[in-house]
Amino acid sequence: MGRENNTSVTEFILLGLSSNPVEQLILFGVFTAIYLVALMGNVLILLLVSLDSRLHTPMYFFLGNLSMVDIGYTSSTIPKMLANYLSRDKSISWAGCLSQMFFFISFGGIECLLLGVMAYDRYVAICHPLHYGVFMSRRLCALLAAAAWVMGLTNSAVHSSLMSILSFCRGNVLHHFFCDIPPLFQLSCSDTQANQAVTFALGGAVILGSFLGTLVSYVYIVMAILRIRTREGRLKAFSTCTSHLTVVSLYFGTIIFTYIRPNSTYSQEQDRALPVLYGIVTPMLNPIIYSLRNKDVKGALRNLLIKTSSV
Image 1: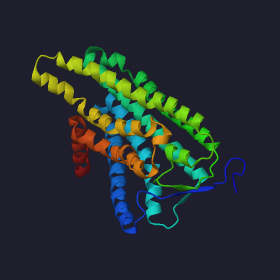
Image 2: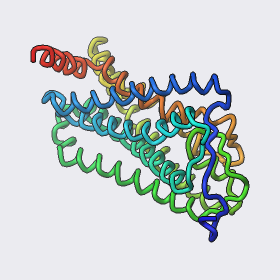
Image 3: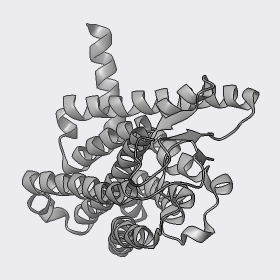
Image 4: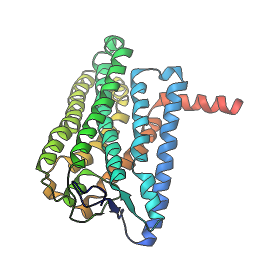
């Protein structure tokens, strides 16, 4: 059958978040709304960043990259999940499964790295404001963004390559809404120790490295803010970080819990809701958080609406 040399499974069955028909219709409506909000919000951020010259700064350059990642992030899983809720055929081919995993892990890794880069940007802006233009030059910003994309794609390519050589003979039913590393490990009848070691090593480097870099940046940011004498000055400095800090808090906890732990502690039934938080909800909330808590973005949106209404 298809891939005789290393597996007897040619497709997987994605059961999704529920097998109840009524609940599936409810979930279809909920995730359709989330997907539309995520797409519209992130596309709007991209438009504002590209059209408003006041947003042509490093901070918003990285925010634009984050919006592109979030569009890809949600698009790698939600369309297939929505199609499955409306169809009796919930299968996905082996190639489709591997492709879905590749893109999901790619965008997840890039998001981690971009959040770390954005934390460094806030560190430079608050701790070295007089040298901000020198430290965060256009060339450096482009290099940092490119590095995040290359590292995220490379990390995912390694995981996908190692997954492609595993054998699957313990069934093909995934109690999940997409193809992810931990549930696929549980279905494999191959020795996955090498794969798990790579997941810990590369996943730790990308996820924990980005998280620790973000943490260190905020330690210095807090120390710098505390040295500001006036309460108004401290609030103004901290307000430039609140949007990013909110996104970081939402994102890193669940993704660390999912990937940086032993495979033996993973439960398909219990842990399938975690990726909803970091892979679907957070990309939807990012543009909302950055628009509602950011006066520059709100100003750019106001100007865009005024220009549109006057045409």
